[in-house]
Length: 588
Ligand SMILES: [Zn+2]
Image (cartoon, rainbow, N blue to C red; front, side):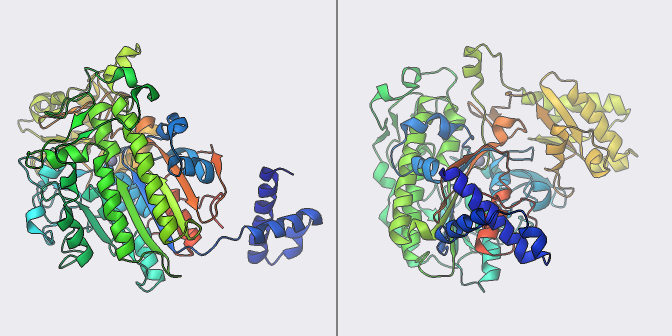
């Protein structure tokens, strides 16, 4: 009997046990099950009983499109991606079912097991109608950073969404539903330790949930920081780690290729005109990080594998210092690796930089799994790895392959461009469009009311104007969604799953496939994700550890299933908004 058959039998019998437990019609259920099969299954189930879970390790790789680890599978070393590929349950067709595939949206979806329409994190930035201002997703003026000198430096911050935040304070207050970390807290009377770490605040805060502890990297201080939501002062181990100056160790050095050039599939293609030429960092290897005193030194660390290495180093210290996974109460550690996202933005998915970044990430993962095995034991650790979103290819790369793709002209969506047409169409004097902040266009709703216009009609008129632009594929209004008048089809469904009536804008704009805005407030990048197209929604979902048996599953699943599956394995309640289902290859 092959392993596959034996496993199938084991599962089929487990399924019958489940029915037995829940059904009083015992006889009906058992009838038809051959006795031999039953006995084989019984033995097999007992033999594969999983050890207790002492640690849940939830890894997120920012912008890791689902196909990328498989593309480079033959190049990986031992213990990292190869361990996941060979010994993990790897879902090759996991797709988000929401439209705005941005970082906080994905991280919150992984933490809560639901869509942004429910958890409320509809974009990295949204317009707060009460405040009358754009709001950065995890900003919270009530909770300043513990180290007040470690906040965002607007002069050197390259992330335009960070520059929008009105305060340095951060908290998870905007996440509207509970997370896996929160449910662990409830189940174990708060005794379960819960931590999240990332270079990005928005990569850590949603996963720590309302009740865990989050740390993220400060480009200003070169250390990891947190806010007063979590701590009044740093734990000693955090102060010690920051005092060691690990980031400074990269000063004067460069990001170089891990292996000899001939081992890379993109070796002859390092210098591409479409890649972003960040001053001092360049388009080709080696990419110098510069001296510690240079303005962009820490920024350049984050846009290279160094950011992930620092994240691992901090997480390693955390795991040991906080004694995670040392007893029968399961602890939770979420780590989000951000380098893949920055490298993707600057160089694209098919670049020598992305290739080397993934090989270095593989090494980082191998070190992490070795550490966890040493400190906790992989058999007592349930690992899940996924991504917050995928990413597109560079239009220049596609052009070279005979696919005529280009960038979107965002100025065509500015209030200045749209207001004259909207005035004419509605026969009013007022300028109703206030802003376009991808993916939403916003109207001045008070002005719409004062102009005696129906909001739905104003939105519809704007949608029609926008849809007439060749670069726009769909324009969907808030009223269509809220009134249940949405057209059938996959794109409207994805946009509706992204819609929160208090936070979403008036018109959701979808650009043509493989075309996107690349100019953000002066920063030009090679690629940008955030679309409802498949390459932005497709991510890996892999479970490993805890004596799971390796297999590859091609059945379509969603990343929302992760929270439900973790809840199943941990015997805890699923998060309050969770819509996913436990994945049967992992669930008990
Ligand atoms: Zn991201």
